[in-house]
Image 1 (tube, rainbow, N blue to C red):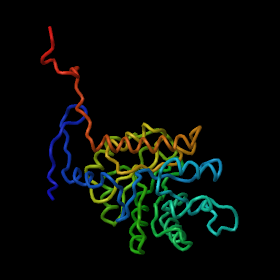
Image 2 (image 1 turned 135 degrees about the horizontal axis):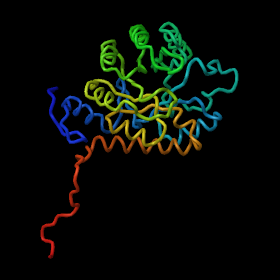
Image 3 (image 1 turned 180 degrees about the horizontal axis):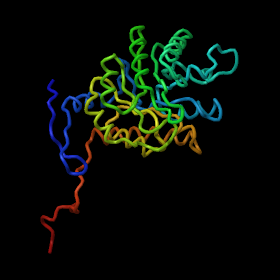
Length: 285
């Protein structure tokens, strides 16, 4: 299939390049999210931290309609010697995605991923290697190093990363099964701060899903992420820290669906002047 670019009008009325390869990839992914050959109906991935109780977590997961949920390996009681989050997540209903939250080196992240697999969570891993404690931005070099090691060990790696297209290509070359750029700093709720970079990533990343990870604060942020072409959105704080987390989880479910439908449908071109909604032909004067 050709990957030659075509020109199309952007929302501003200016032409921009849209890859035919990206277009066909997104058409193929229209009905389901496919990661490493596994199919998911929901394009919303949710975290399980920061809720007031395990019971609230369970209610929010149900309302979100999500099929994949992330679990922080280093922060959960994995030996089950007391009440655990895992007691409230039905593994027959949800696909558990362990993550390496709280890791600041490649070695820490690799050990954490191995632990998650050893206790039977999964051989999938949402890879996070943090490079700065204040901003929680990823250490991209350590992320790449850990990605290479874990893939050699048979893991399906979904790395949290910056919105740098050059580095995204390196993760793809290493064998990552998705690219997960931040929309804004983790837990900030600022919404998508890097629209241009997300658009560029969408044009370049056509072999694996592009999943916006971090920064979503409300439903409109999720819609924007999906309208920019993201295949899915991963969020935690935007739901867990809402005044009504269960209701916000439901709002996020609908937002992701609406944003995806709008992206695939293709928005109308923006114009400076008005255009009548009804034809003037045949109007009685």
